[in-house]
Length: 74
Image (cartoon, rainbow, N blue to C red; front, side, top):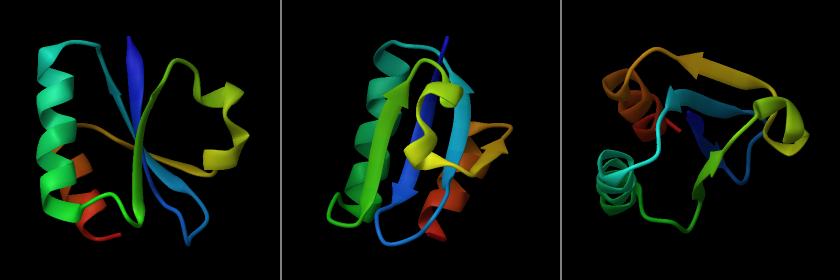
């Protein structure tokens, strides 16, 4: 298990999706990067949100579609 984090580097807070490592996650990250680029939006995978205070406060979303919509709204 891991968490995919999306953060606008110019704003406080981030979006968090509980997921798992693997090809599906890599493909999803590539899809998001193709939609939003990587100039302003940072996509990282972390193991424990509590260890990464620089991304707080977190908005936890329930699925990939909600995560994608939230990233597009950043």
